[in-house]
Image 1 (cartoon, helix red, strand yellow):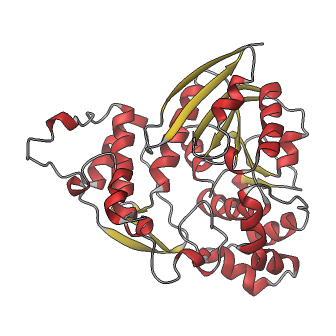
Image 2 (image 1 turned 120 degrees about the vertical axis):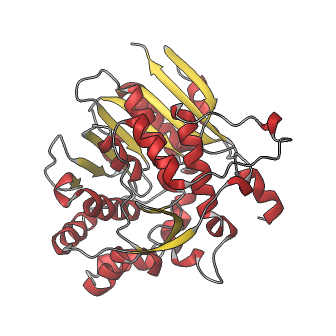
Length: 356
């Protein structure tokens, strides 16, 4: 991607963003039991990813699967504690070995500015910052945008101080007085806020997320008071989520596949748990993945969503072979809304409410 084209990734003038970049140092802790649990849970997983994720699993994640299959403890500890040493995050986060070969991608070099731009978009979505008006850009008075000021504004809007966990070393992002803010942090914050609004007024709502990335949306959903949360994902991604959430929230807040789960824990489960299950959910969420797993797998998920969800939140782009909008058009007895996604240009936010 050439630099002149990259300016279209921003939602405002890049030169108004007072973004300074830095790397996380990481944090040490006693994670031995958490790693034991992840090894045991991974040994029970049998499913193979589909679509684009099949290639990533067979290529980028092969060494990770081998390390866990062999129960090679030193390699496993290095993979989990220092994700930049492997591709465990490849496909959903920039702290990955293959993305660092030959230097950072332009997307990662611009991470501080993109993160600050996204924080400003989040503050605008929350109504705590006025929307910029491009028609006024002929006025050459630039008011610089600062990370800490935006975070304070967002705190006031959501009613709590936004935490920014940095358990891993070598994560590059925006320097703030709370830690390094990667581009994924404001995205997850917005998604958690939208989840909280869609289940507002429900007693102890049950939320399920298909494809949880690193688990940041689940982490921030807990800050909004949502306790009954399930993530459905493929094996290696589940390892990343289990380790991150165990470090960020404490390992007792997380339940892995094969363990007895409590209602208040974040449950990390394989696709079959949802596709072949019977439990109902107040809200099912999918962000940037349903159209990447192949139509056959997406149809299986869509069938389960239609039969067992009260509402469905989709945040996806429409540049793949099929779209979520196509799936929605096939449904009956639904109420839908569609709008541009506040946080990322080219993405669509759709909400489906199933009327039974």
